[in-house]
Length: 450
Length: 141
Image 1 (cartoon, rainbow over the protein chains, first blue to last red):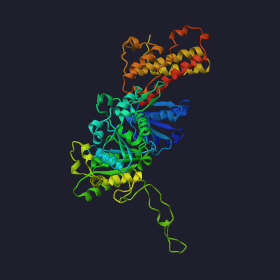
Image 2: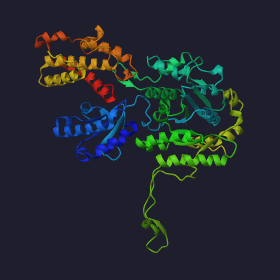
Image 3: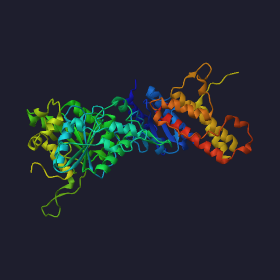
Image 4: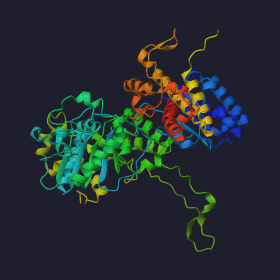
């Protein structure tokens, strides 16, 4: 039985048997449709060339035979297109390893695209708080970060995009300050062009900080209303009268840009949904984040999850666009045996960064290293070895965790808002100091520990 | 007599190919007619994919309102598209390019057809053809 995971290896084997003929094609797409069934998409010129047409047909027949349910019968397995780009539209497209002009085209039923990486935004810094698992104190850390940055005089915009388990806003706002609307309201009204004048009703000011400002845009308003009915529609693409469409992440991007124009924040903190989820993919990859904080507990579930994600970035050839924005945060670090806990966490984080994201750097050849031949006793390295990689112990490396300590005063809190309202600087620093320092460095603030 | 089964996809493709062939030869009247037929067949194939009930015994759509030509089927398509979870990706413009097209025009004199008329119907048929191609790539067809 051939299952989905067998498709690419079998395709590569079959194509390898026709390598010579395949090099005559300008391009070849291995199209995996929504059901995971394979078709070949080839240039239209092939249809008019009997020799090439037969050859492609033979490939299709072999694929049909070997892939079984994951292929179409040969007479329905070939599609002709004028050019490659339109045929790849709305799909995930990446080269097939080992072939120059063969691409895998994946049609996904989800709008979320983990391999579509928007360039870093050039305006206010956008920092995304992401975790592979929920319940790791991500929202609390975000609230503390907002508090800290506002104390340092920054204008902070906070977005609650954990739409499926909203709650961040209640950490930052007492009930009487909750705004009228939330992000879900805006996204639903946008579908029917009804957002005029809505922006002010989305924004509330937190009372936590007296120096800077914290503007909060929650997932829902003071009255959530028909939240579930709205939530089921927020992912809708917007279709204009000419048939063109704007997917939901582009709509969200539009909202964020409007908010930034209105509020002129220095920094935007975004609370993402946890896990390999559609909303999360938008937060992490589509919003032009400058920094993505990856909250981690030391355990297999965390690392297996991040490994799946990193491997996908590597396979789809976008690792380079993403890796410099990532930073591991050790979440809820326990009181006992901290050193051993953190060194285990760092080791595991290093393991997956090395495997998927860091460049493999071969040592220079032995002939290239040694005393200079002119007898000057100087040492030389004759080859420049370049690449993006870090030592395991490098404290500036993205795998080297910024730390948030578990603290009894935040465990099982009924009201985070009440807790943060009475917190003092020293307490915040003792729990969140490493994270706040890290974020501060990115924003050009002085260290809180100096 | 051997009765032939409807194959909307193949019919869509052959009508489109022949319409293009005739268009190039400046045979505006029959090109225009076939753009309409290609549109009807393409949309019916997509409607089937979106769940249109079909009477296999009579080899035709079960509901009378689905048995229409290009003009009417353009509107019926919207009903099925709207009710399908993949429908958002298969939108046709609201303005129906086949409003001035009718199957009975096949009896009309050729002088009633010109390039402009054929061009507007070609554009409509091409939109349907693009959706059919997209449905093939996505595995809906």
